[in-house]
Image (cartoon, rainbow, N blue to C red; front, side, top):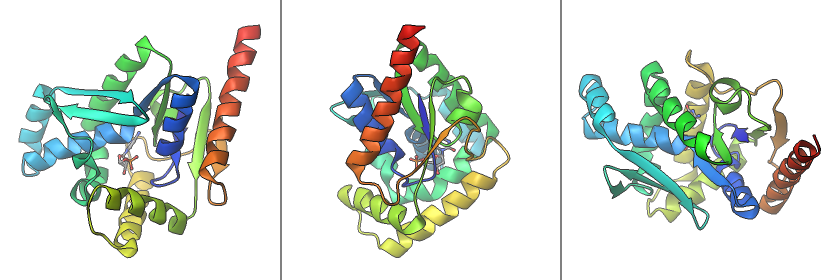
Length: 220
Ligand code: DC
């Protein structure tokens, strides 16, 4: 099962709650691009060093108690990858075709072993085109910026709504217009506009669609 959509549309928090409710695994593909960005920043933005370092890095993750934990070479970087510095550089790193191949291979390998709900930008179109169920979540920019602001502030950073709004708008633009697997709704994805939905409504809607699909599969 996959949920794609722009930043702040609610896909990650919704997917986490659905995964916890249905007792399936959750995979945050954006977090993996953020870890790659951390490696890039640690290499002082030197692309050659970055690729060497990325190949050598050990990236691991797990989902527990509604939180997606990410480790880089054994260090928990779950909070660090949400910093504004990472957010400002992640679209550039994610637009690199070799980085996308690296992250996609990591994801395809891990989903072989369990049932997953994964969230991202291109999962329904490029990474898992045969997913059982696809959702595409959207919300207006103001709503998305307010949601992201709460997330960034809870990680201890002091930023303004305007800064978050600009970052999201710039990322929307880069993510939708890059040449490698841009942010795009898959033709067979269910469109979910969360601008006027409460969090509980989003979770209930997605969960019910998944349950419907599973019960249909059980009957065939
Ligand atoms: O979901 P997020 O905001 O944490 O994602 C961070 C960035 O990673 C986002 O700006 C675009 C990129 N990304 C991507 O290109 N493809 C994905 N499947 C997931 C995220």
